[in-house]
Image (cartoon, rainbow over all chains, first blue to last red; front, side, top):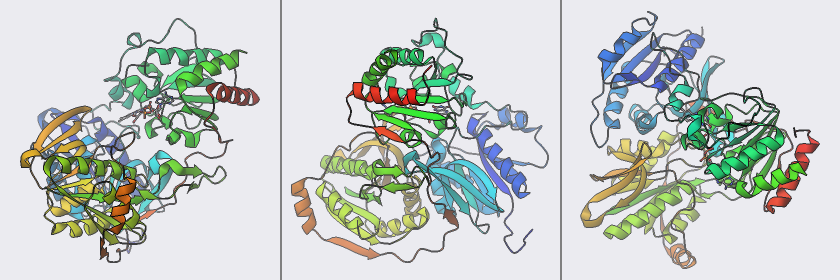
Length: 328
Length: 250
Ligand SMILES: Cc1cc2nc3c(=O)[nH]c(=O)nc-3n(C[C@H](O)[C@H](O)[C@H](O)COP(=O)(O)OP(=O)(O)OC[C@H]3O[C@@H](n4cnc5c(N)ncnc54)[C@H](O)[C@@H]3O)c2cc1C
């Protein structure tokens, strides 16, 4: 080990406990933290910030002894609840000489992590989609140009690197005996069962996970009319039907069909994306398809940047025309 | 009310083209006022009309930022400050320069965009607020300053809510799809060009602890055919032919 490099040591994970419930994103941060701790050979500290520790504490009793756990109550005050988080986080960050601080990229995290960076004068990488150690340096990947391209941000070893992750991009592991909610569970909480959507289940389509061809719909489908058009295309191509997260949340398509980090990860020969934008959580599940086709009315949608064939236009007009064309 | 709006000179992502061989992005359009900031400017002008306010646009960036400041003035902003700076710097350096320029202005409300179209760090607004020691509110939809009271409409967990907030405060506009409500007018451009833009020189940025690799498309290769401005039937014909050619029909 090159001792001239730095005497910064240790990984600090700033976990969230909301009224006794460990946030699902904390499992993701913990996973990122353990990955870094192992790769750098450095100790991990898990700071649990929030309220309701009596309920959360038992989960961490079985945690590996090498992991240092600390608890800090956060007493939020309206109308700016993030203020209390910055105060405590800044104290923890400056009390140590950390190599890396993993902070939340959740709704409230996005509010306070930039303030934490400003108060401590430390560099922050927000919206990170992955973490790694390259030649002893900590690096994160993140999307730039509105999701059209990716970049790697590397931090010198002589600065404490604050990393905030984009939620839903890391497969979460258990923390002690607190079973990790899978991302699919988290999403399923909001989503609906197949019967609530207008999907025609009487037709025998190939199963999504094994299908050679998949046609997936997003928010742009709008309603049952759109679903019918998507299904007609699936049947014309003998394809499975997939869905984006927004199509599931809007109850347009059922959760079993969701493709992405909290749905299925697939590598079909053909992936035809209809009326979906191509968020990082979605492309996580389909970027390795052999051929990608996109139909979207917004030419700026990131999905076009990974498409072999793109059609800019209204799906409600193009799908029926395409079905006609394929039948002839 | 004294209102400030922070603006940035950025690439137009709608003009990004990815080289199919190398995955390298290039831009067919001219950089200009970041689209997120156009929404913030619209908010600022709306707010001004509710409280007889005065708006100052503040930006840090290269010489070309001046045109963006002029556009802001043509959209309803009253005056502009250009912090001259060339090159790349950390968000915190940018926030520090903006905070320094704002500190003595006694602004009641500072408005910013949410995510810029280029690097989209979503940090600068919150950092400026922290450096000025004032609170911020994110995901703002609109602000009203009638009777000297600031009422803000914002989004929280997918729902809109309205609250009265103290001043001074920084408001981060919610990312919005579609076109900004306000645009520069031709007449506005003519008068704006005659207005002076105050100039401040930024110091050199300190060495950054972070290194950003050149942006690269996550997936490259492939045919990269794009069909646009086509009748749906014609577009469908082309796509069907391509699918057949690649033996992708069942
Ligand atoms: C923890 C977590 C996990 C998540 N996991 C997943 C996941 O596994 N999978 C997933 O997909 N998402 C997931 N998400 C959600 C994800 O962040 C995005 O919100 C979602 O993927 C967006 O879905 P969309 O592309 O359909 O919607 P949008 O981003 O709203 O895109 C809709 C698109 O439709 C286009 N459109 C609209 N009308 C038409 C028309 N008439 N014709 C043509 N085009 C049209 C628009 O131009 C737009 O590009 C997750 C989020 C979180 C926080």
